[in-house]
Length: 104
Image (cartoon, rainbow, N blue to C red):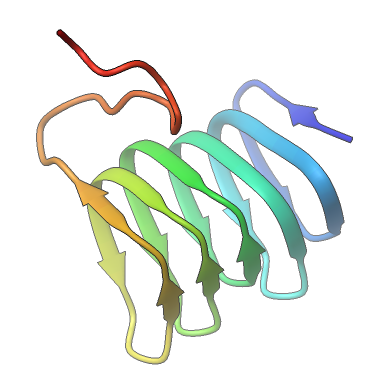
């Protein structure tokens, strides 16, 4: 299933085939996500297989494994973090959701 929340959330469970969307998300090291993430601020410390769109800062901790495309304004990646995919980092701009329409 999908999770939509307001405010701040720490996700420490397992999600397969769904999406997580909300303002401030922390993915705990024991979590496992197969799905997409949309957030204003996101800290990832676990395995995420899917696309991640963060309008602000995305922080990949040393325990993070991100397999998918990342769109963000700011990226912090700790030594030991794994990222396999394309990164679209555009400082100072709000990013459209993955798969969104491109401006003409």
